[in-house]
Image (tube, rainbow, N blue to C red; front, side):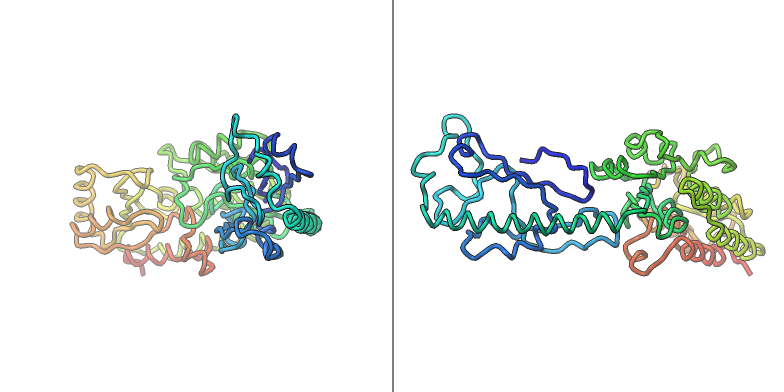
Length: 403
């Protein structure tokens, strides 16, 4: 049964616990904690004499499914010692993988315990030998992994822009875990037990704070290793509650500096790149025929304010909110008055609402990315904050008639 907690990261525990009656009849009881992936890799060593019920095909997933550089999911054999089931060897009359009985039926009969005689002893010895070899090999593997990670700070970031800042600033001195996987809207993220464990074992936890991802904030608390980046001095947040400060390169540079201070690694390189990006935006949006950007989601207040634009949002700060009919009518009328040619939607949210307004106004639709996270396609292409911000700039220039 599962019921133990391990302190080593990336270890999944498999414990076989037998009833007292069965344990009393056995010559020896072995309890082991093994990394599941390594057990799967070496399960092919089980000799042919062992019954098929010992080794079962079972889909495995990476220990940390949130990192793109982790081992990909694949079909592997694994030794299943979970769920309090009996693993029978050839020659035993025990029902394959049946739950251990309780009460009066818990005591196995003499006939069941005698079973296969000498053949059973040989098979048991083979299995014990394999388990000992696994233990020795996995111990060596764990020592090697621990040595490789020495000197690197473990950083847990709530979602992509924060993870990108930590990785760029920390470089090879940090190991960054992004709790929001590609393709997931960070507002919708629900904390898992794995997330909580990652937060508790991290050297630094980087959150936006102020209710952007409440479950992660509750799990992290406000300890000295936790920073809320919306509290960064000089950020000057808007009263409307818009959290998307990273869409303003100048404000994002302040966040980068705060992360660098927390890591003890001030980094002028990323800040310099952000200042250059700010100049590109200023030049690219300096001479435009229009200044209203019609968006499906109210996520671009900081970008609009920095570069003299006016955001017209169909819905509010919640991406999945359904607009009221009067809100749609208001936007349709405004598009007509301003002669807007483009209705913007986002990569991680359905374009349905933007397409509805576009049909009513005979406008086009285009992507304006709030860069809350990468899609799987963007991640596979190697996109990052800077490539997405420059794509946003080109989309804005086309929609606003800039020259």
